[in-house]
Length: 185
Image 1: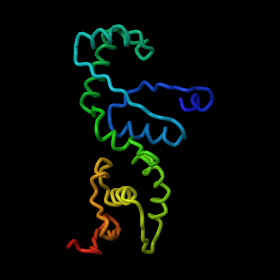
Image 2: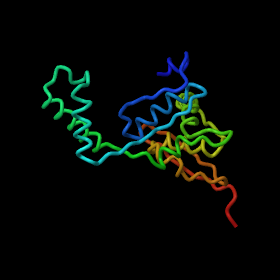
Image 3: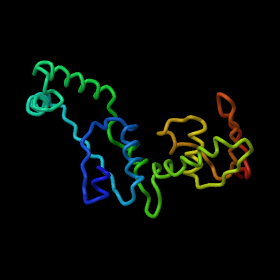
Image 4: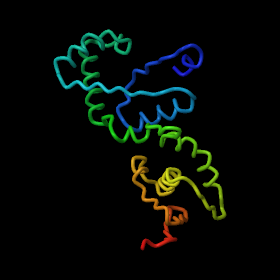
């Protein structure tokens, strides 16, 4: 798809099962590495069993995936897929928007995370103390990485402007000490 866009295409539609935030973030990171592309996730939810059944019969039974399968087995397999998707499904919502929203003349959290990857590799190799002075979003991303926080917690990381956060990595954990520079009056 990206090859098509890089050569001649203007719009590409990737029709796949992107039912988890993790999967959508992976796609977003992959696409954001190519300059100039805008990504839009569209969600269509159908709970009407008659429409779902009709869709299975009209499309899935004719799909190359089920070419060598009996209609009964194809329907049963696809119903099992639907059950799995429902179990793991994460709706599009605020979490996606926080990571994908690119501020005017700025970056999205995904942009920051992909830009920080080589920095993190270098920090992991360092054996001497390192002082990082950075924008709050960068501090949040690095903090979340070293404390092994879920990606969705990055925007909620408490990183006040009047504190120095000291992180000390050990073999199995990262120890944190906060130093208040200017106590609130």
